[in-house]
Amino acid sequence: MKAVVTVVGKDTVGILAKVSSVCAENGMNVEEVSQTILQDMFCMIMLVEAKGENTDFAKFSGTLKSEGEKMGLVIHTMHADVFDSMHHI
Amino acid sequence: MINTGDILETISMIENEHLDIRTITMGISLLDCADSDVDSACSKVYEKITRLAKDLVKTGEEIEMQYGIPIINKRIAVTPISMLVASSGGDPIKYALALEKAAKAVGVNFIGGYSALVQKGFANGDEALINSIPEALSVTDRICSSVNIGSTKAGINMDAVKLMGTIIKKSAELTADRDCVGASKLVVLCNAPDDNPFMAGAFHGAGEAECVINVGVSGPGVVRSALSKIPDADITQIADTVKKTAFKITRMGQLVAGEASKRLNVPFGIVDLSLVPTPAVGDSVAHILEEMGLEQCGAHGTTACLALLNDAVKKGGVMASSHVGGLSGAFIPVSEDAGMIDAARSGCLKIEKLEAMTAVCSVGLDMIVVPGDTSEEVLAAIIADEAAIGMINSKTTAVRLIPAIGKKVGEEINFGGLFGKGPVMPLNTSSPAKFINRGGRIPAPLNSLKN
Image (cartoon, rainbow over all chains, first blue to last red; front, side):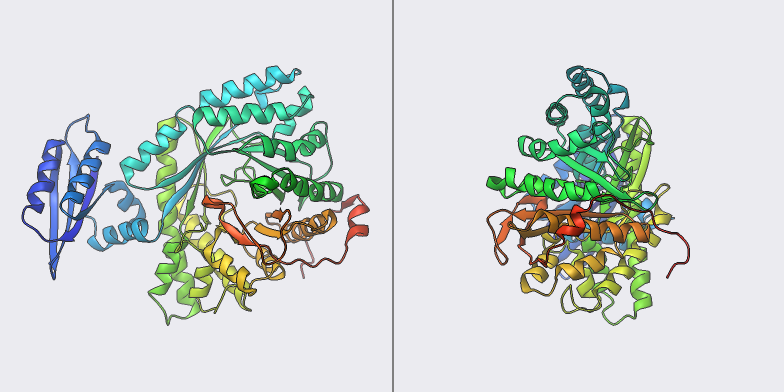
């Protein structure tokens, strides 16, 4: 399965490193990253794919959320199907 | 890759605009639980519900977690219990207790179907069930009850209308110490749909499959926000924007419905294309109408705005889902909608305007708090008026009134949670008693020569 991770918050050192290490620990392969910095707000959208059969998606999304809070970031993880079905006919 | 703008739009809908799946409702047929012994029927009912719905709440939570979409309620709708009472006889309250126990066991917050369909007349079991409704709603927390008293094909059963005036009053009286909450779990319908996932009118119709999954979506905040981005648009653009937004909302409902049906191994029934408000700020249907250009909901023009909204929601939603059903349209429950509460408090929104609005939107006079001393005949006459609108216009209409026992116009009642709060609204108290006490049936209407 594929998921979209969005990260929004104040820019600090190590955001990309932190988020991608959580992905790696949970067996999620990062397929695409797009990021911008608007003034000093950091915005990143990441497309990730579960490589193993037994990826615990709930744990992955929970870890990202709590790690994000520690760094003052809002991290949102959603199944990519949501965007596909909502925006494509 | 998926378009960045689309991603941010979806996340903003969920985070800031209260987009959610309002309910996943499992419809369960209890026809095979009928038994000549009431106790044995009740144990079959309990066994069947807890067997089929044991994973409903867990699956809902898993989907919520995995897809990142909030799913607010997981609920159950069952075959109208009057059909079981017809073969078992005995005390219908036993069924209410069995349903309550089953609802608690599987963890759903409401179970609908303590119902009777009497649009043409009372069969065995119907009157016993209806007369037990006030007690059933006062001794249980999770049971919802509905009675269908009219339809376009059958006309209106005025004996049932009269009886329901009394039952609504009694349901409020028996729960007077709990903000009359009994009456908020009872709805009187005309043209009741068999596959409605929303409470209190949900039941599993006799023509439905053994077990199905129906989903109701919600998103008034999303529609309002979309309209606020086009402040100077003309009405054609407004209708187009509502359609497009409704399409997106419904696609999400369809996705969740398909996934729930696959995981529970239960066929998908329908998606109910609805705009359902909650008392939360930013989740109001009244505010959409105000965004269209009304100073406050209830002003002249409200009916036109609501007609446009309701129609555009259906047009957008129909293409987004493979099967559409239920109540499908904009809901206008007064106590559950922050904008409606304000409009009712200020006196801008009156019951007569609400009645007109029900002619062009889904459902009807919903969650309206009325004075506690309102006579049973006036309550019955409100039901008759509302059913007449539904019968003539071939649409579902419903009445869910809460007589606030011991309270007068201007005072408020607060249910808390999704049921919200509302001011006691004034009613026209001229007596319709003679009309209501005549009994009999209003004949089914002509379906041609439409004027």
